[in-house]
Length: 189
Image (cartoon, rainbow, N blue to C red; front, side, top):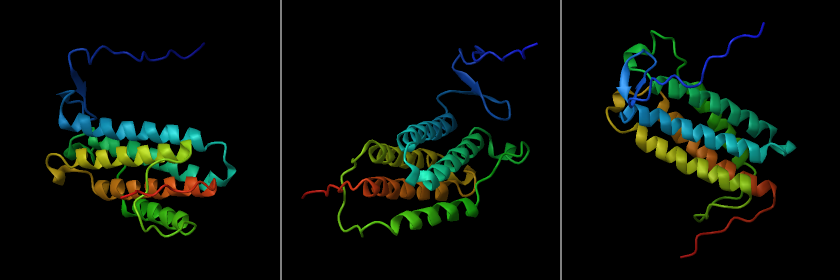
């Protein structure tokens, strides 16, 4: 006998409210809803980036890194979808310094193959690089949005993670063009 599927629609949000991890009902326009919504959008953009990268054997390490980042973004989103006092009660996965060091290591690995940057570059290049730039700008928006309100209530290491992630996405965009021998277009004054 087939297992009964849960319906996707619950109709519980039809009144403009949604539930947090702790069960509290809040209006969908609340800052915390916007915060994890922005994280979700970034995660979706990274999903598209992964699609553009999927057929390149040279990008296996980058793909693994991005999939790990997607999981960490879900961790961050779950924390942003709960009141700070509920995070430990529900044993939500927490950001940590190890995650940040991992991204820094990947930035260094990719940057070793790139020419030094002496000018601003225009976002673009191949589809994957252009999408990495979109991810970078969405990531910067996430950073701005999660800083709204009381930043002491943010999960530990969340700002560092998002800041480092935007750096990674920038270097990744450059790397994606580099391995395809696409010249970066410089900002002309």
